Length: 281
Image (cartoon, rainbow, N blue to C red; front, side, top):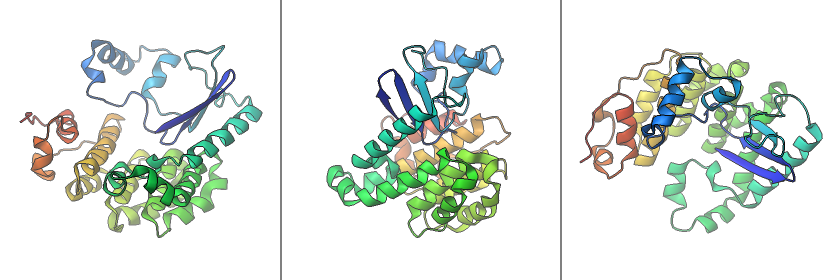
């Protein structure tokens, strides 16, 4: 989930889930020989620093001088420069996503259920909630000590999507957010919202606090819609592909058979990538 804004020669990018690197598996992409070769060269450690960025986690923010750096490979945030420009463009983007309001701060399965008939009206009715979720998401662009109180408040909030974004922020900080491991285990075990459980398991797995396989497998079994199952499978693909030793042994019976029969089923494609051989019916 990336948003960007350009002012003059500068481009600012906000990576709301920076652990989701650019090179995550997409079906159409890795049918192309060039992408297959690029990935193989990365695995063989034959890429330079700029080329490797595609397959590695990002910073939550990026700032590029696109006049000098048109291919956007030199992140000025990483170098600690242009801080005045960074603050200005950060504010512009924050105001932009709040004013829309940006519906994607709600998970896609929830949007499909609640906003499909009239997304504009839904956005206006929930503008305050979306603004609050954006504020939680933006905790990842300050220091962990500065964000800690806000994260704790989000993880204990009554609104499930505040808990959801609090966990995404934890994943963005990784091991630095270790004080929230126990809270994440609690949410992964007993939260009433399945997608909050998923994000909690994802955080624990990304931080290597525990093996997330059994928790995410249970989340997949509890998925109520095709979109929910696909979102959970996206997390499973990420955790299997980051090469931390997580191995998911999934079966067709773990998901609703109707989802596997749909034309261009994303769930079927994901399961096939993870080792099954489900034919397009």
